[in-house]
Amino acid sequence: MNRLLLISLIFCLGITTGRAQSAVYDTVPCPAALVSIATENHLEGVAYTCGVLKVPENRHTPSSRQIELAVSRLQPTPPTDQPPIIYLAGGPGGSALGDIALWLDSALLAQHEIILLEQRGTAFSWPSLMCPELSNTAFRPVAACAQRLRDEGVDLAAYNTSENAADVADLIHVLGLASVNLIGQSYGTRLALAVLRDHPERVHAVILDAVYPTHASVYEGRLAAAQRALDALFADCAADAACNASYPDLEATFYRLLSRLDSSPQLITLSNYGAQFYYNDDYLIQDMMNWLYITDEVPLLPGRIMAFFDGDFSYYNDLILEQTATPISMGLYFSVQCQEEIPVDDIESVLRGDGRSRFEVSDPLRRILREQFASCLDWDVPTAAAYTRAPVTSDRPVLLMSGRYDPITSPEWAQQAAGTLTNSQHVIFQNGAHGVINQLDCADRIAAAFFLAPFQAVEAGCASQAPEWVLANP
Image 1: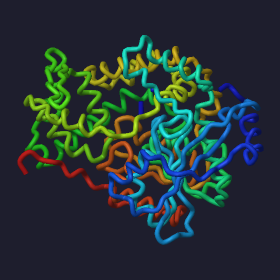
Image 2 (image 1 turned 180 degrees about the vertical axis):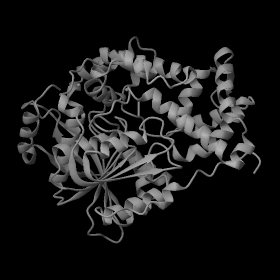
Image 3 (image 1 turned 90 degrees about the horizontal axis):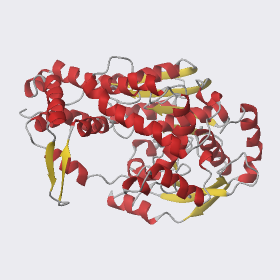
Image 4 (image 1 turned 180 degrees about the horizontal axis):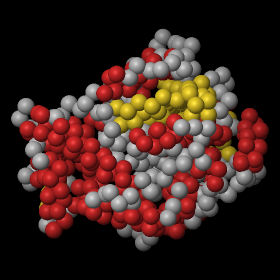
């Protein structure tokens, strides 16, 4: 999760009447990079095909050019008569196709075809709104990326959640699907809600995993969510006899470590890269937020904190070597956030937070927030219509999933979203983080049962399982 088209709702809905004439789907060979991901994960035996969805870049401009969204269709064995699942990745800017290894190995593939839609502007789609300028020393790199994309003919204002939702509707239409299930994760939950709002006709059921509602501000809630996740980690380790015995006073140790890194950063040598850098409190807070995104990382964090406190930073070196994920499209991130959230958020309120975040936690995050707000001055896109920020109302069956340790999309957001979703259920996973499907077997079982009988209450007893902490001296 990291970084607005002024139109009326009547016009937005009215343009969809031309969908059948404007969208085209072609089957194409799968990209080599996608095949490589599947091969590296030893998943060659699973049947999947690829295609390209061609849609208007800007549905509000009659002369708009066509853009191409990559699609992969994962086939169940044996075939099934259940509605397919369309997966909507997070970000904004995350790659659905980049997650193919998770879905080829997913328990849900036993019951459903799974369709991965690469959102407009992301890694495998054209044009891609990647911003390599952010990784080099370009002057004002955000402005440099925006200018390059505009010079290439990209309409930055056309990359937003409403257009994204229309892309989903076009895909359903051109594939001739009578009914579909949606799974959205993180920003993908906001996109799924927009589909429910604008194009509900063929939606059978929806799972929202790590819920980011249309009415919520990820910036207004940033400091509180971060502190809440850290507090949960420390409280749960202290309440577990074995974790507390291995890592006594974990909370105090963490804040002492932050203070030490602030006054005396740790010099770290990356032997595999022949490089050195100073690791300070900003790095630690950013790393903790990143690690708290990942359910499998949570049980390791008490030990990692203690190792860092003892001067052992080998974990950091190992993690760098493991970073192989498909990069996020920061251009799509800027286009969405700079239209839909940042223009209507009050920066001073964002930086104050709710007053309950500790200074050591909030100060590094404030610096990041200031940078994100400043980025929108350089990206220069219009503010989205107000209706896009209203809570979504729907009677479709919706299952909302939250992780206790999620540092950005809090369980409270899911509960708020459920208030206008009349046939919804909310499950909080006590050992979950930011996204639990394909991370916890319990979540996969609940998801599978929900899609088979979406109006029935799910059996969620397994969601109460606590983390199995990795202990120093078990």
